[in-house]
Image 1: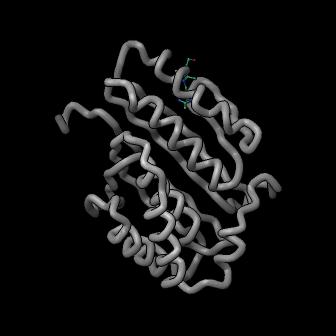
Image 2: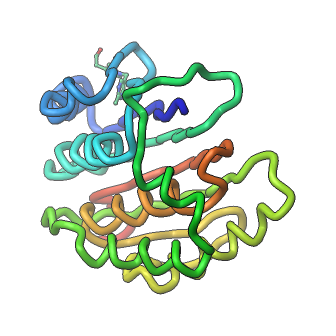
Amino acid sequence: MFIGAQVSLYPMTSDFVDVVKSGLTALTPYTDDLRIETDDMSTLMVGAPEPLLDAIRDLFAEAARRPEHVTMHVTLSRGCPGEPDDPSCHCEALVRAQDLLLEDRKALASEAVAAAPDLGVGIDVQFSLYVLGQDHHMDEIYGCIDFLKASGTFLKSKNFCTRLRGDAGAVFETLRQAFLRFGPAEGHVTIDLTASANSPSLR
Ligand SMILES: Cc1ncc(C[n+]2csc(CCO)c2C)c(N)n1
């Protein structure tokens, strides 16, 4: 299994270089568990969903603690057939998910969100889950949407995507659970997400 994300921060300030660079310092605790490579457009992070989503959360929370409006775009992918296996991406929750029914996976996902830490940073997210190459992909998507509606971070359904709102801790746990528990454990699943904080439209 190969699991990872391309992540780009977009701070709405002329001081954007400083916001991106200080955001990237929040990744330092994860350098043992993730392969992290930054270039001029984005930062690649490869590794298991536990450190991966924590690192993306901390990167965004670091930037969102400043007063300026900031957005982040993330492409998450697991099980892409074209990617090599990587032992650092081993995930017990995915191995166990192979034996679990959709209803059990929804319950485990909700428990994880209820136990998420509070970071004291309010954020908005909209995202789409894509379950690729599967006959019953809509069952998985509707199962995921059921979980999202009960997660405590659900804001609304929109065309093509779902809006979440809440503390960065709960919102990123919701995203991790959507990514992990829906779609086949060995299949190809991606999430396309945009996060936003401090938008002047919400003041
Ligand atoms: C997470 C993340 N990684 C890389 C970039 C691309 N980028 C834009 S400004 C800048 C600092 C000056 O080189 C970098 C690396 C980004 N936007 N967000």
